[in-house]
Length: 415
Image (cartoon, rainbow, N blue to C red; front, side, top):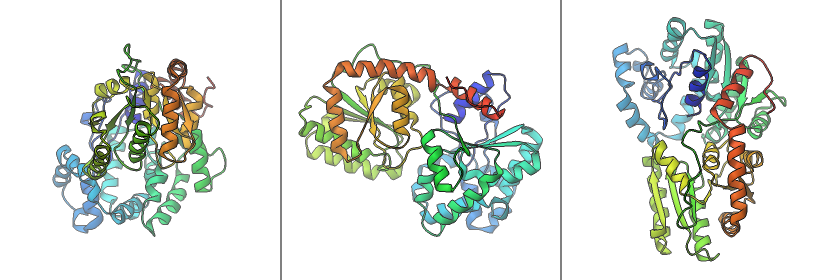
């Protein structure tokens, strides 16, 4: 979504912009950049998987590659991605970082040929540091500037089995030197990755993510009941289990007997076991009628969901690089309650649209909810201040201006 929002704003500013989908079709909850549907998918997930396993598929004809890149097949593969082993993820990640010497050379040549013959860019942006292996050859063939974005690669790399974890970290650090500009979505993540990679302070620039504000607004009607909400992938890494435990504590121990919990976000087949486990836990304490689930919702439904909340939390277990869901909630006038760590501190301090609680477990989260639910005046102040600061710092328009300053070698504006 960040890439699409940025591309649309750059297009509005008169820039010629193309998005090249990698691995899978883009899944967006907003209108895509004009012309995106006519752009081929590169390094299609099925082709890459087959070519990593069997050399036969590195020589298949173009029509077969195109078949494997069909939207239906790729979306089916995405729904079942949880079945791919951690070892396979590690092998494929390392191959992408060594792409010129890997079994993906055929796929890389397709990308290079398209860029030379059709795209002809002045700047190529790589949307993740895991694509750092592409930079060197793109620069040699096209003579262009490379801008590379970080977006939370550490949690993926740290989840790989050895020896792939260490090998991928080391190789990514080496290959990042081929990019002209490295960009992080937050000051926290810039410093964090500089430390992890052994880079000098200031080597990774900062460009906060932003959202298109259209539709995001505070509801005219407050929720009928005090309602806490969660909007992220329904998984343990995002803290869904902590969210449920905190809600149970809020209801059973802190006296908020009328509180409700709403959970929304992406849910894959691999997430179903956790969701079912949590539903059973909620039912066991008699709260199942007061917890509502909304998997895989649209943009319109997402906005309506956020507007129905009193408070918002995503108690992530890992050091989150940004957290666009916080900006969306604050833009709807909903105060956020987040762990006192990572980029959350930065976003809460910049917007004034919430609080950070000591990361000591679900009870601490519930205590923070209880405190804010008991103080409507404070919530109103957070709601009004937060919305104004999102407009000032976290819009897609501001993001595109920052990008243009970066790409032209200028310092970011201070406003």
